[in-house]
Image (cartoon, rainbow, N blue to C red):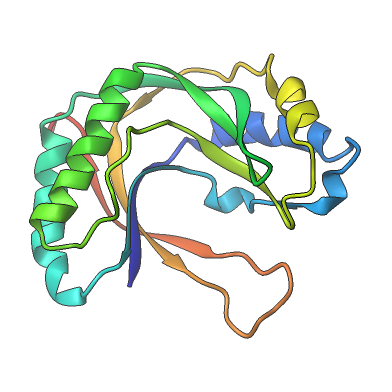
Length: 190
């Protein structure tokens, strides 16, 4: 199964972002972007790809320990950015050091459980809102429109293990469906 560790923003914060994204869809070039499905909005901490089911018990135990060792932290959706001409995202503000630490712990948990992880990169908190279909859209006007966005703060209190169900059948515009298959409280029980 295709898995990743994530922080899932609460519905109220996703609604705030949704209102911002609705404004972006009226900008020139918006019709050439593939907008991410709102039920799937998340901050990926560690992408694991295809994981053998035999590794799941150890992976779950290790992610539980990673969550237990990480204290809850404040976060809010904030501004925007882009990766080249391919990805438009909103960022995060708050205790990004603690979020980076959680990402590193999730990555280490997966490695120790035997999941072959890609090359380790410095974590950059971002939530993808759109992708360019052919890398032919100037994303700077979208980033400028997102720049003043300041979401309401919330307390991150959980690490989620999410399964990505890829669309089948070659349906144009179909997007992955995400299913939380495990979740652990930060800072341990209580």
